[in-house]
Length: 613
Image 1 (cartoon, rainbow, N blue to C red):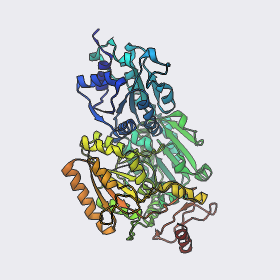
Image 2 (cartoon, one colour):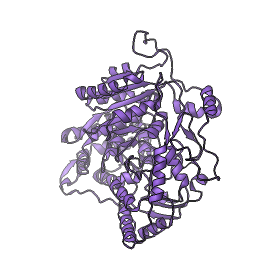
Image 3 (cartoon, helix red, strand yellow):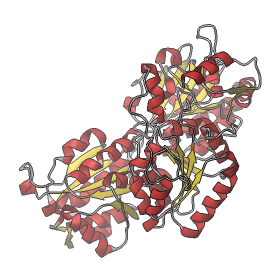
Image 4 (cartoon, rainbow, N blue to C red):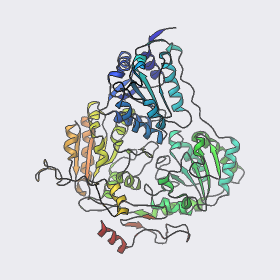
């Protein structure tokens, strides 16, 4: 059996498992692995400025393309603890990433050695598997098992912790005969598919809720085929956005308390049957289960058995990979159609489309400082149809989901459940590293942008160009809006008089951090936009700067300090705050008299809201 250094074996396994890029920060306790990376020279390494940033880069890399697994590397102690947020974010959204940490030698474990921490125990709650390798011969098999677990069932992250003496060891290992382990994915049966289609066929006003599991399974093509065959409209979740094009006549809008469309909520409240595929009934989508489930039957299809019944018990559950299930659903629908039994959904689909075309939110505002709605309108007009958006949390993300348009799977890359501030910037760099040709636009509020702004230097150093939209109101906007319920505005303002801002300069008095100066100091390009008549030229300049310099370009929009974005506590009670457009006054946001009146404000109410702001 050939002998080799344990880290050479580890890197050889990474190569065989398809790894071509790794993100990380070297350190004393992980240097043997870095030495193997240097010796073999097959894996590109991108040096992060923060180890949490490296974990989010790996996350973005995984989300960018089907089958990708991002890898992040750090030394012992704080590097591992810095990665915990990255592990949590990936686990929450069913994203496979591999975190590799260095560790003190085995003889020094549990002796309070320098930078020695039990990262295995810390990581277990937020990883699919976390393991400290305790025998040198286990190294290649631990890495093999890691990839097997990340790909099997519900995808998720793994952490491998490598003591220094393990890394320095010699082992016997034959890489020439190595093969990745086949992934396990549960699949629906023909009988289950037929039962599901029979239940669907009995309903009058059905909807399909398309979750992130459809994106993960690379099954968007089958979803579109299925809905076109059955005529059933689709409600994508935030993680499933892009699984059907926004302008498809059977895309009925998103539902929820925040990242939703008025027409999506209205259509859902009219439905009597919900067919969930690859979704998890997240609370920002459902609101209270009492309102969400009332008067409806449910089917739930998910790859993870314990997801079915976790939030509420469906009328029928199927454990299956979304792609495998959709193939059988299509076959079952064809059987019904051939027998002349597939129900015609034309009238229901037409009513859903009518709401989609008429129940809109206003976006055209000409005022200065800018309203955020106008920024998203301009993004729709200035950016290409195949733009890939990357974002995490905040009013910027919520308004983006309400106003932007997504037409392809993996063109809305969003950290949905965990939503850590700072995720956007490094994740966008990870997406760029995975796909050199994609049109990438990151979307941040000013606070999200400031959280990991140092990672802009990574984009400059490694030539990872993308466009970063920063909507700047110098506020923790989402928390400020939430604090309205407590009648306060406390410790959420980021504004201050920057002593370096001058009346003659471009910086905005009172808005605090000069993002343009910081971005340019980190080796990138930046443009500030203050008025609506600058929009078109600014987008054109930004694109030109990216092409010329091959670095991230920041496009900052100066917003009014306070704008309340539509949201509510229930899907039938969303407070619109701003003006709305309803081209058909006969449309209602209610299913029936069972629910309270829609919360779209009268002019008097809108004026009162404005006064309170």
